[in-house]
Length: 566
Image (cartoon, one colour):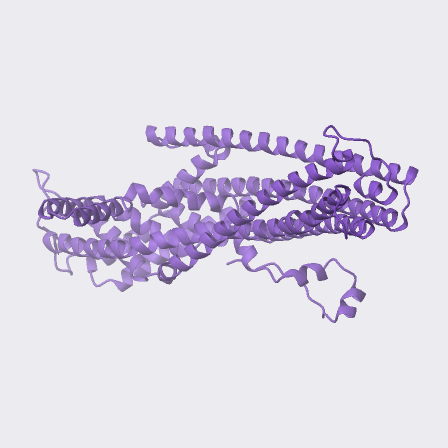
């Protein structure tokens, strides 16, 4: 309306204030709202940039500890196996009439008798070594978890910052430029001199065209991000594809059973203790019939993992499809805005008005109202969906916590319907040394889906070495020293040290570990691994643009290849 009025000197009814024509006053009010929007967008960009910066800093801060953790320690598995054999040996040790352990045990006539004192000393030595490894691992374990959590969030934060960057350019540079043109034209109406009103009107229309172009750019960027995430999703789904079938799960369990027996044989060959060798050999000779329940549990957990993983992938796919539809709508709106802006430029340059200006104004009003209405509808739908998901997750979490308090084994249906219950069941299976086949098969399945094998090995170690008692002794010693300091600063420093030790208790370490498993079962870890292996924008565009275009710009053939499974 302002461009048409400036070019034709028409449409000038007085406003309520009687100082400016209504069209100019409306432009100034619109400019004020445009300024508010620019400030709001700038604030969102600042928040997104700060979030990405914090994640980048977290990756740098925890990288060294994470690398040490990933490096692993081959001694852990050997010591865990030796301790299990020694514990088994002592559990089967013969007793006298008073149920006391015999000092010696003659198991094989050609061999010298086993000494209870020596066997107990060997077990104590192994446990001391494992405790030292667990203490050394605690800090690196924490670094690893923090690094993985930051890495899983970085992809989304980066895409979000790129999207907001385009919005900032549109709402700040382009929209405020158009607002400045409107303000200049209004100033002319108030008597300002030396301003070419026709040129200002043309410039205002040009900014309108640029606004439409940036809407198209934002839509194309959103389309690109969603299409790439769908490609990443397809690649992630191909990981562990055979685990979706009963035959595939059966094969993993059979392989895990055979490897578990072989590991016992190998551990027996490595150890210097004849008693331990015999215990490992006996464990390897356990008949398959005695491991049926263990194998059945392994297959059930693998099926539940794949069930929740596929549900998460379906949710990701539905969300990205929705984003693609909205991106296409934004592109259409941007193209229409460019056409309308071009029409206003033509009217301003030629001094044309009348019916053409009225029709163009009506079209602009209709499309603007449509865009605003659709934006409000999308916002309401998204908020309702977010509230529904949050409520459902809160109920599921409460159910999982209730099962944990009851200290009972969840049913198959509970694990299938509640991913938090399934995560606790998985952790319990990995921490349970009494079901080695389940732990071994589940480990194989998780590793094939992209989980770090060192993480699973660390879980075994942390489950076998309880650090609460060790930290409790240290905390008590430090607390006693608090009385020795008169300085408040020294006292506060020691209190901080005690609190830091409390954060590494066995139960406290399970909380971030559950979050890490949640990221994994919800597909975030797999999607991030694919994101990190992306070949770039050119490869994506090459798959969607005709060959002649690439020949003209001098870009050779580039084929998109999904990242290989880690």
